[in-house]
Each structure stands twice: as structure tokens, then as C-alpha cells.
Image (cartoon, rainbow, N blue to C red; front, side, top):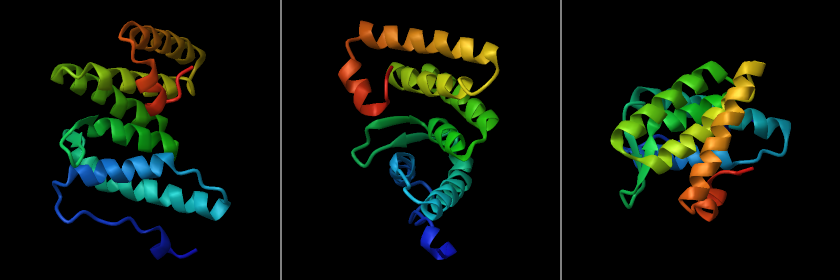
Length: 157
């Protein structure tokens, strides 16, 4: 496998946040089946992470201008894939606060769920905190009657 096979397409304009969300979604949902493909996906994630890091303080929107949350959320999930749990934790905490200030409760719930996934990989104290966060998120999802919506986005317990 050559490096050119793993190259990420670049956006036509640096402000193309829709591009970044699309690329991140494709990388996150890919399930490489061979070692070489895993290696390639990891390189793509690393490339994408480096390309998107300067835009952490921006919103991610789709081509139809629907809100997808803070770029910090995308960076946090990419950092999780790359195994950099400290960076993932920092990005997701930033995204939670960013979306909370913006008044985007659904994206806050999603980011809190991924934050719990990062904490699950930490110390026993972190894992205990992760269980509490996940329980709060699931209760809020149920209270808002959003289970079907969230099941399509993230694998709820």
C-alpha cells in the first residue's frame, strides 16, 4: 500500500466545514478488515486530525446548513480512534462546553456520551464517572423521547 492511497482529499476552501464533517464521518464509520487497511485508516485519521485541529473553535455544518456541533467533537472522536485519550478528553470537554454555551442540548448529550467512552478507558475513578455520565445521558435521552434518534447516531447501551 502506498502513501498516495491513504491521502486525504483537501477542501477547496479552508472554510469548508461541511467537508470536514463529511470526512470525519466517513473515517469514523469505516471498518477496515485487513491490517494494511487499518494502517491506512489510521494514517487518514492522523491526516484529518492535523487538517482540522486549527478549526476546533468552529461549528460543523452540513451542506444544508444543519448544525453538527463543535469541531472539538470531531477532533475528540478522531483522537479516540488514534488512541490519544488525553487529547480526546480535552477536545470533548471543550465541545461539551462550546455546545452548552451555544444552547445545543442534543450535541451536548452526544459529546457527553463520547466523553464517557474516553473515561471508560481510564482509571477506576474515571470508569465510575463514565458510568454516571452514561446513566445521566440515557435518562435525558429517554426523558426527551429521543431513543430512536440516538440509536441511529451512537450505540446506546
